[in-house]
Image (cartoon, rainbow, N blue to C red; front, side):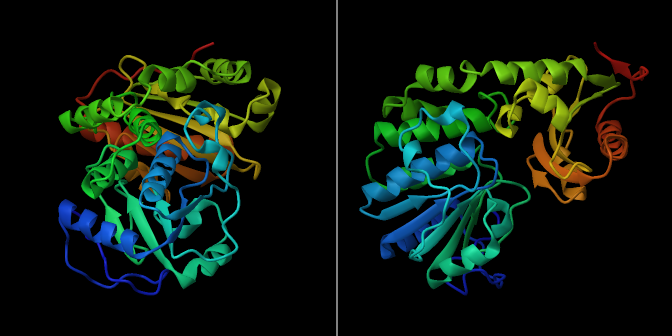
Length: 358
Protein backbone atom coordinates (compact mmCIF):
# COMPACT_ATOMS: atom_id res chain seq x y z
CA UNK A 1 0.00 0.00 0.00
CA UNK A 2 1.14 3.58 -0.56
CA UNK A 3 2.38 5.75 2.29
CA UNK A 4 -0.15 7.32 4.62
CA UNK A 5 0.34 9.82 7.41
CA UNK A 6 -2.09 9.71 10.31
CA UNK A 7 -0.19 12.07 12.57
CA UNK A 8 -1.91 15.51 12.79
CA UNK A 9 0.30 18.35 11.59
CA UNK A 10 -0.19 21.80 10.17
CA UNK A 11 -3.08 21.03 7.78
CA UNK A 12 -1.58 22.30 4.55
CA UNK A 13 2.05 21.57 5.29
CA UNK A 14 4.02 18.98 3.35
CA UNK A 15 3.88 15.77 5.38
CA UNK A 16 7.01 14.36 6.92
CA UNK A 17 8.03 10.72 6.56
CA UNK A 18 5.73 8.31 8.37
CA UNK A 19 5.25 4.56 8.54
CA UNK A 20 3.53 2.76 5.68
CA UNK A 21 0.07 1.64 6.74
CA UNK A 22 -1.90 -1.32 5.51
CA UNK A 23 -5.41 -0.82 4.17
CA UNK A 24 -6.90 -1.92 7.51
CA UNK A 25 -4.58 0.35 9.49
CA UNK A 26 -5.44 3.31 7.28
CA UNK A 27 -9.17 2.76 7.75
CA UNK A 28 -8.78 2.26 11.51
CA UNK A 29 -6.74 5.46 11.86
CA UNK A 30 -9.22 7.44 9.75
CA UNK A 31 -12.23 6.19 11.71
CA UNK A 32 -10.50 7.29 14.92
CA UNK A 33 -10.00 10.79 13.47
CA UNK A 34 -13.63 10.97 12.36
CA UNK A 35 -14.95 9.86 15.74
CA UNK A 36 -12.80 12.47 17.51
CA UNK A 37 -14.28 15.37 15.50
CA UNK A 38 -17.75 16.87 15.26
CA UNK A 39 -17.96 19.05 12.13
CA UNK A 40 -16.71 18.42 8.60
CA UNK A 41 -16.62 19.95 5.15
CA UNK A 42 -16.38 17.47 2.27
CA UNK A 43 -15.30 18.50 -1.22
CA UNK A 44 -13.71 17.13 -4.37
CA UNK A 45 -12.23 18.31 -7.64
CA UNK A 46 -13.51 21.00 -10.00
CA UNK A 47 -15.82 19.82 -12.82
CA UNK A 48 -17.06 16.99 -10.60
CA UNK A 49 -17.77 13.55 -12.06
CA UNK A 50 -19.77 10.64 -10.74
CA UNK A 51 -17.10 9.39 -8.36
CA UNK A 52 -16.51 12.85 -6.89
CA UNK A 53 -20.22 13.52 -6.35
CA UNK A 54 -21.25 10.03 -5.28
CA UNK A 55 -18.31 9.66 -2.89
CA UNK A 56 -18.88 13.05 -1.28
CA UNK A 57 -22.58 12.40 -0.74
CA UNK A 58 -21.96 8.83 0.41
CA UNK A 59 -19.42 10.11 2.95
CA UNK A 60 -21.89 12.78 4.05
CA UNK A 61 -24.49 10.09 4.79
CA UNK A 62 -21.90 8.02 6.67
CA UNK A 63 -20.74 10.94 8.80
CA UNK A 64 -24.30 11.93 9.62
CA UNK A 65 -25.01 8.34 10.67
CA UNK A 66 -22.11 8.88 13.10
CA UNK A 67 -23.91 11.96 14.42
CA UNK A 68 -21.57 14.48 12.76
CA UNK A 69 -22.28 17.88 11.18
CA UNK A 70 -21.42 17.89 7.48
CA UNK A 71 -21.24 20.46 4.67
CA UNK A 72 -20.63 19.25 1.11
CA UNK A 73 -19.20 21.97 -1.13
CA UNK A 74 -18.24 21.96 -4.82
CA UNK A 75 -16.79 24.91 -6.71
CA UNK A 76 -18.53 23.90 -9.97
CA UNK A 77 -22.15 22.93 -10.72
CA UNK A 78 -23.39 19.36 -10.36
CA UNK A 79 -24.28 17.84 -13.77
CA UNK A 80 -28.02 17.08 -14.11
CA UNK A 81 -27.29 13.36 -14.57
CA UNK A 82 -26.46 13.16 -10.85
CA UNK A 83 -29.41 15.12 -9.53
CA UNK A 84 -31.01 11.76 -8.70
CA UNK A 85 -28.59 11.13 -5.83
CA UNK A 86 -29.81 11.50 -2.27
CA UNK A 87 -28.66 14.75 -0.66
CA UNK A 88 -27.57 16.43 -3.89
CA UNK A 89 -29.79 19.42 -3.12
CA UNK A 90 -27.72 20.13 -0.02
CA UNK A 91 -24.48 20.67 -1.97
CA UNK A 92 -23.30 24.25 -1.70
CA UNK A 93 -20.94 26.29 -3.86
CA UNK A 94 -19.32 27.94 -0.84
CA UNK A 95 -17.02 26.68 1.88
CA UNK A 96 -18.47 27.26 5.36
CA UNK A 97 -17.71 30.54 7.09
CA UNK A 98 -17.03 28.81 10.39
CA UNK A 99 -14.02 26.50 10.12
CA UNK A 100 -15.01 22.86 10.68
CA UNK A 101 -13.04 20.39 12.74
CA UNK A 102 -11.78 18.78 9.51
CA UNK A 103 -11.84 19.35 5.76
CA UNK A 104 -12.00 16.15 3.68
CA UNK A 105 -10.77 16.32 0.08
CA UNK A 106 -11.67 13.49 -2.28
CA UNK A 107 -9.85 12.71 -5.55
CA UNK A 108 -7.51 15.71 -5.29
CA UNK A 109 -3.72 15.82 -5.50
CA UNK A 110 -3.60 19.34 -4.06
CA UNK A 111 -5.95 21.93 -2.57
CA UNK A 112 -6.08 23.94 -5.81
CA UNK A 113 -7.64 20.96 -7.59
CA UNK A 114 -10.91 21.68 -5.78
CA UNK A 115 -11.42 24.91 -7.73
CA UNK A 116 -11.67 26.87 -4.48
CA UNK A 117 -9.09 29.54 -3.73
CA UNK A 118 -6.26 28.51 -1.44
CA UNK A 119 -6.99 31.47 0.83
CA UNK A 120 -10.47 30.07 1.39
CA UNK A 121 -8.94 26.80 2.49
CA UNK A 122 -6.62 28.71 4.82
CA UNK A 123 -9.73 29.37 6.92
CA UNK A 124 -10.06 25.62 7.35
CA UNK A 125 -6.66 25.53 9.08
CA UNK A 126 -8.30 25.60 12.51
CA UNK A 127 -9.14 21.95 11.93
CA UNK A 128 -7.21 19.42 9.88
CA UNK A 129 -7.18 18.26 6.27
CA UNK A 130 -7.89 14.67 5.23
CA UNK A 131 -6.97 13.47 1.75
CA UNK A 132 -8.69 10.37 0.27
CA UNK A 133 -7.65 9.46 -3.28
CA UNK A 134 -7.19 6.52 -5.64
CA UNK A 135 -5.26 8.15 -8.48
CA UNK A 136 -1.72 7.18 -9.44
CA UNK A 137 -0.96 10.89 -9.29
CA UNK A 138 -2.15 11.15 -5.67
CA UNK A 139 0.11 13.07 -3.28
CA UNK A 140 0.47 13.25 0.50
CA UNK A 141 -0.43 16.94 0.79
CA UNK A 142 -2.74 16.80 3.80
CA UNK A 143 -2.39 16.12 7.53
CA UNK A 144 -3.85 12.65 6.97
CA UNK A 145 -3.53 10.86 3.63
CA UNK A 146 -5.22 7.66 2.49
CA UNK A 147 -4.23 6.91 -1.11
CA UNK A 148 -5.04 3.56 -2.69
CA UNK A 149 -4.32 3.38 -6.46
CA UNK A 150 -5.65 -0.18 -6.47
CA UNK A 151 -9.17 0.98 -5.58
CA UNK A 152 -11.57 1.10 -8.53
CA UNK A 153 -13.10 4.34 -7.22
CA UNK A 154 -12.98 6.59 -4.17
CA UNK A 155 -16.58 5.47 -3.76
CA UNK A 156 -15.26 1.95 -3.14
CA UNK A 157 -12.90 3.33 -0.48
CA UNK A 158 -15.79 5.11 1.26
CA UNK A 159 -17.72 1.82 1.06
CA UNK A 160 -14.84 0.02 2.81
CA UNK A 161 -14.82 2.77 5.44
CA UNK A 162 -18.57 2.37 5.98
CA UNK A 163 -18.31 -1.41 6.32
CA UNK A 164 -15.43 -1.07 8.80
CA UNK A 165 -17.42 1.43 10.88
CA UNK A 166 -19.98 -1.27 11.65
CA UNK A 167 -22.81 1.18 10.95
CA UNK A 168 -25.71 0.24 8.68
CA UNK A 169 -25.46 1.28 5.04
CA UNK A 170 -28.66 3.17 4.29
CA UNK A 171 -30.37 3.07 0.90
CA UNK A 172 -29.41 6.73 0.45
CA UNK A 173 -25.73 6.06 1.12
CA UNK A 174 -25.80 2.92 -1.03
CA UNK A 175 -27.22 4.76 -4.04
CA UNK A 176 -24.57 7.47 -3.89
CA UNK A 177 -21.69 5.00 -3.56
CA UNK A 178 -23.08 2.74 -6.29
CA UNK A 179 -23.18 5.73 -8.70
CA UNK A 180 -19.56 6.49 -7.80
CA UNK A 181 -18.39 2.94 -8.50
CA UNK A 182 -20.56 2.53 -11.61
CA UNK A 183 -19.21 5.64 -13.32
CA UNK A 184 -15.55 5.39 -12.33
CA UNK A 185 -15.30 1.82 -13.60
CA UNK A 186 -16.84 2.81 -16.93
CA UNK A 187 -19.93 0.74 -16.10
CA UNK A 188 -17.66 -2.07 -14.89
CA UNK A 189 -15.59 -2.16 -18.10
CA UNK A 190 -12.25 -0.66 -16.98
CA UNK A 191 -9.28 -2.79 -15.94
CA UNK A 192 -9.76 -1.58 -12.35
CA UNK A 193 -12.91 -3.73 -12.16
CA UNK A 194 -12.27 -6.82 -10.01
CA UNK A 195 -14.26 -9.47 -8.20
CA UNK A 196 -14.18 -7.17 -5.16
CA UNK A 197 -15.82 -4.45 -7.27
CA UNK A 198 -18.78 -6.70 -7.98
CA UNK A 199 -18.91 -7.72 -4.33
CA UNK A 200 -19.14 -4.07 -3.38
CA UNK A 201 -21.85 -3.44 -6.01
CA UNK A 202 -23.84 -6.45 -4.83
CA UNK A 203 -23.78 -5.27 -1.21
CA UNK A 204 -24.83 -1.76 -2.23
CA UNK A 205 -27.78 -3.13 -4.22
CA UNK A 206 -28.75 -5.33 -1.28
CA UNK A 207 -28.60 -2.18 0.88
CA UNK A 208 -31.13 -0.40 -1.31
CA UNK A 209 -29.29 1.18 -4.25
CA UNK A 210 -31.58 1.49 -7.29
CA UNK A 211 -29.31 0.22 -10.08
CA UNK A 212 -31.83 0.73 -12.88
CA UNK A 213 -32.89 4.17 -11.69
CA UNK A 214 -29.30 5.38 -11.29
CA UNK A 215 -28.32 4.06 -14.75
CA UNK A 216 -31.43 5.68 -16.25
CA UNK A 217 -30.48 9.07 -14.82
CA UNK A 218 -26.79 8.88 -15.68
CA UNK A 219 -26.82 7.24 -19.10
CA UNK A 220 -30.30 7.67 -20.57
CA UNK A 221 -31.24 11.23 -19.68
CA UNK A 222 -28.96 13.22 -21.98
CA UNK A 223 -30.04 16.67 -23.08
CA UNK A 224 -30.55 17.36 -26.81
CA UNK A 225 -27.67 19.83 -26.57
CA UNK A 226 -25.28 17.11 -25.39
CA UNK A 227 -26.24 14.97 -28.38
CA UNK A 228 -25.65 17.93 -30.71
CA UNK A 229 -22.23 18.35 -29.07
CA UNK A 230 -21.53 14.65 -29.58
CA UNK A 231 -22.45 14.99 -33.26
CA UNK A 232 -19.92 17.82 -33.66
CA UNK A 233 -17.20 15.87 -31.82
CA UNK A 234 -17.76 12.84 -34.05
CA UNK A 235 -17.78 14.94 -37.22
CA UNK A 236 -14.38 16.30 -36.16
CA UNK A 237 -13.00 12.81 -35.50
CA UNK A 238 -9.54 11.86 -36.76
CA UNK A 239 -7.84 8.46 -36.68
CA UNK A 240 -4.16 7.80 -37.24
CA UNK A 241 -3.19 4.19 -36.65
CA UNK A 242 -3.89 3.33 -33.01
CA UNK A 243 -4.75 6.90 -31.98
CA UNK A 244 -8.02 8.80 -32.40
CA UNK A 245 -8.73 12.40 -31.50
CA UNK A 246 -11.23 15.19 -31.82
CA UNK A 247 -11.46 18.83 -30.83
CA UNK A 248 -14.38 21.00 -29.82
CA UNK A 249 -14.08 24.80 -29.87
CA UNK A 250 -15.96 27.36 -27.82
CA UNK A 251 -17.81 28.43 -30.93
CA UNK A 252 -18.92 24.88 -31.65
CA UNK A 253 -20.05 24.39 -28.06
CA UNK A 254 -22.04 27.61 -28.23
CA UNK A 255 -23.73 26.58 -31.48
CA UNK A 256 -24.68 23.26 -29.88
CA UNK A 257 -25.96 25.07 -26.79
CA UNK A 258 -23.72 22.79 -24.75
CA UNK A 259 -21.98 23.32 -21.42
CA UNK A 260 -18.71 21.99 -20.04
CA UNK A 261 -20.71 19.37 -18.15
CA UNK A 262 -22.06 18.07 -21.49
CA UNK A 263 -18.50 17.04 -22.44
CA UNK A 264 -18.42 14.44 -19.66
CA UNK A 265 -18.08 10.94 -21.12
CA UNK A 266 -17.89 12.03 -24.77
CA UNK A 267 -14.28 10.86 -25.09
CA UNK A 268 -15.44 7.28 -24.49
CA UNK A 269 -16.88 7.25 -28.01
CA UNK A 270 -13.39 7.94 -29.37
CA UNK A 271 -11.76 5.03 -27.53
CA UNK A 272 -14.62 2.72 -28.51
CA UNK A 273 -13.35 2.39 -32.08
CA UNK A 274 -11.96 -0.96 -33.21
CA UNK A 275 -8.17 -0.84 -33.51
CA UNK A 276 -7.84 2.40 -31.53
CA UNK A 277 -5.71 2.05 -28.38
CA UNK A 278 -5.50 5.68 -27.21
CA UNK A 279 -7.84 8.63 -27.67
CA UNK A 280 -8.04 12.28 -26.70
CA UNK A 281 -10.81 14.87 -26.71
CA UNK A 282 -9.53 18.45 -26.72
CA UNK A 283 -11.93 21.12 -25.42
CA UNK A 284 -11.11 24.80 -25.90
CA UNK A 285 -11.32 26.81 -22.67
CA UNK A 286 -12.33 30.47 -22.30
CA UNK A 287 -8.61 31.27 -22.28
CA UNK A 288 -8.84 30.56 -26.07
CA UNK A 289 -5.20 29.47 -26.52
CA UNK A 290 -5.74 26.69 -24.01
CA UNK A 291 -7.33 23.26 -24.23
CA UNK A 292 -8.55 20.80 -21.60
CA UNK A 293 -7.68 17.26 -22.64
CA UNK A 294 -9.52 14.06 -21.71
CA UNK A 295 -7.40 10.97 -22.39
CA UNK A 296 -8.51 7.34 -22.64
CA UNK A 297 -6.69 4.12 -23.51
CA UNK A 298 -7.04 0.35 -23.66
CA UNK A 299 -4.93 -2.34 -22.06
CA UNK A 300 -1.40 -1.39 -21.07
CA UNK A 301 -1.31 2.02 -22.78
CA UNK A 302 -0.53 4.37 -19.89
CA UNK A 303 -2.23 7.73 -20.48
CA UNK A 304 -1.60 8.68 -16.84
CA UNK A 305 2.09 8.97 -17.74
CA UNK A 306 1.19 11.08 -20.77
CA UNK A 307 -1.01 13.37 -18.68
CA UNK A 308 1.64 13.60 -15.97
CA UNK A 309 4.19 14.80 -18.55
CA UNK A 310 1.92 17.80 -19.15
CA UNK A 311 1.18 18.49 -15.49
CA UNK A 312 -2.01 16.43 -15.28
CA UNK A 313 -2.75 12.99 -13.94
CA UNK A 314 -5.30 10.28 -13.34
CA UNK A 315 -5.45 6.56 -14.06
CA UNK A 316 -3.61 4.33 -16.51
CA UNK A 317 -6.60 4.19 -18.84
CA UNK A 318 -8.36 7.48 -18.01
CA UNK A 319 -6.55 10.75 -17.34
CA UNK A 320 -6.59 14.45 -18.12
CA UNK A 321 -4.43 17.55 -18.44
CA UNK A 322 -4.48 21.12 -19.74
CA UNK A 323 -2.23 22.42 -22.52
CA UNK A 324 -1.61 25.98 -23.68
CA UNK A 325 -1.32 26.83 -27.36
CA UNK A 326 -3.28 26.89 -30.57
CA UNK A 327 -5.32 23.87 -31.66
CA UNK A 328 -2.63 22.77 -34.11
CA UNK A 329 0.17 23.12 -31.55
CA UNK A 330 -1.74 21.29 -28.82
CA UNK A 331 -2.76 18.54 -31.25
CA UNK A 332 0.83 17.99 -32.36
CA UNK A 333 2.14 17.87 -28.79
CA UNK A 334 -0.41 15.40 -27.45
CA UNK A 335 -0.42 13.15 -30.52
CA UNK A 336 3.35 12.73 -30.46
CA UNK A 337 3.12 11.51 -26.85
CA UNK A 338 0.14 9.24 -27.44
CA UNK A 339 1.66 7.68 -30.54
CA UNK A 340 4.93 7.10 -28.70
CA UNK A 341 3.03 5.44 -25.84
CA UNK A 342 1.27 3.15 -28.30
CA UNK A 343 4.48 2.25 -30.10
CA UNK A 344 6.02 1.19 -26.79
CA UNK A 345 3.18 -1.23 -26.11
CA UNK A 346 1.86 -2.38 -29.46
CA UNK A 347 3.27 -4.68 -32.09
CA UNK A 348 4.06 -2.61 -35.16
CA UNK A 349 1.02 -2.35 -37.42
CA UNK A 350 0.40 -0.62 -40.75
CA UNK A 351 -0.12 3.08 -40.17
CA UNK A 352 -2.81 4.69 -42.26
CA UNK A 353 -2.81 8.32 -43.22
CA UNK A 354 -4.81 10.61 -40.93
CA UNK A 355 -8.52 10.37 -41.68
CA UNK A 356 -11.25 12.89 -41.02
CA UNK A 357 -14.53 11.10 -40.61
CA UNK A 358 -17.32 13.30 -41.89
